[in-house]
Length: 475
Image 1 (tube, rainbow, N blue to C red):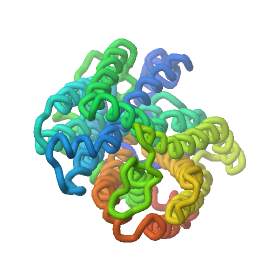
Image 2: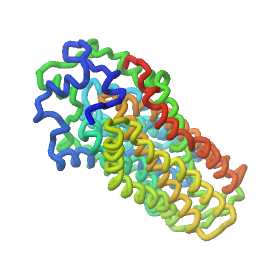
Image 3: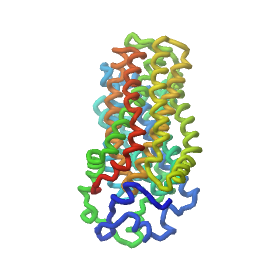
Image 4: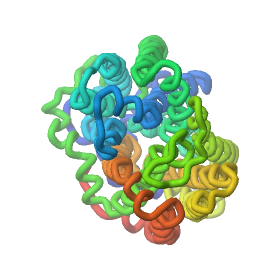
């Protein structure tokens, strides 16, 4: 099992402290074993992963807190347009997408820890600004900046797992980490509904400030550096000058990966659609379960903040998928490695195939049970099925990108995040108009049909992924 057919092993280059090109593997060989994160104790690795995951969860919670408080925001800041009322959520999602363009490459220049700390400190301060803002323009601007600052956890976390865990061990870690971008939004909906009902939307921002402030202190105390090239340079007592590692080249790396690597382009486009559907679902749940029917659509009219409980359908699906992937993904990967006597990122795609099949099934159940006004448990079950398929797909995608791009996986994941966040923001703004025009049944079916078009993607990656990754590309 010595053969390792990955992009990271034969195409990716890094730079030494003198600015010369060097193979990434040589840095790991030269690094003191005691400093190598791969050799840390299991408890130390999981403390690090838990803090990074908590950052990702809070960043995702920050997205949906204002989705359920949108009515209060609109009333307080005198917003009358449905599209404008969706902007505080949409621009936050955009920030989550654009932040990785600079945070990911900077983490490959200055280390993961510095980026995590500076970003989350900024996120905490920006939430204070959101709590005090008195006009809609100020709120929209601050929310965009908060999205930028919070994007370190959702983006760099996958690369941090690559720093800490060997491939045969990383499946469970990736499953745990995806709690952030997938379980965070429904948790934000549940908590946000009750906070908005009892304290108003500004207390949603204060709750987020308190949580992010506490987490920032914990990260200062317990979050060590994990990026091996940075640790290696620091251990030699030398600084990595911007001129030596190519500042412009580093900052443009995510976009170049997205445009010039076909495998990244294809997978990112599909995950962008899935992510967009997910956020559309998150921001339109108040339509189906909110206390007041809107746009002539049916509503279950859950009152007193209980409409936030509707997000538990998504949360349950994420939890089920998390448990399954946590206990089975590593074993499945090792079994394929043993069968084919090699290690390849494509061994992550069987789970991805399962996920892409489940996603449209859940969407059709959700849409048509809501359209026919059936018992509320049925659309929640559809949301559960959809979310479980989405999480399985997301975990497989993250694992594939980390395996394929090694030390530059942060930039590769950033490339994917940009596309999916742009699509997610568009879906947030247009989601209500979609259901207003087509209803729950056909509106959701349009999304289901789009998802069905992606069914062959995992098989094509299994068959042609290695060939696509072999395309020469200078990172």
